[in-house]
Image (tube, rainbow, N blue to C red):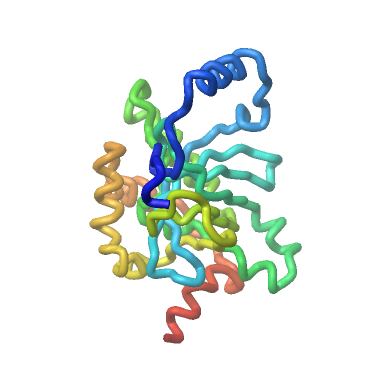
Length: 229
């Protein structure tokens, strides 16, 4: 596979002129209502539930299905040519309470992501810092109470050039020390922040007043296994 062309980090050659023309034409005449409902771009790190020492950056492009369910497409970057690496669903506590116990074990919390400053809503260059800071903080207040279930379909962190194998359940981090196998929270998140022009320390300070919800003991189960080893 390594001898084949690689484009945008994936096996395969560059788009042909014909494909580019068809793509441009489709953008002008077709209706993309499902993806046009995307209303938030969030960025954070995930860990594989069965290998929590592997950290993967995920750009979430999320829409509201209704007041209790959000659905997000996950990409490896926010750039053109980004690879679609997974999906995540977020639900309210009200819906979570209707799930059987076995199903609850597949879900994760977002409290640490929010309170640590890891979870960000990257600021558009045309929006003033103060205005975006207010909007982002409001988004964090909404997300901190939600539970998420996410699967990665493409393991880009190990260099896969196409999606291989079965979907992998991923989880969120609940403590900074859990990121040590990946180089540590400050290094990993700090490097991400430098790319986006953000500061997790600043966000920690701003979000100190966000109330932490009570988290179900049924979620974040990947870390139970780590504690037992």
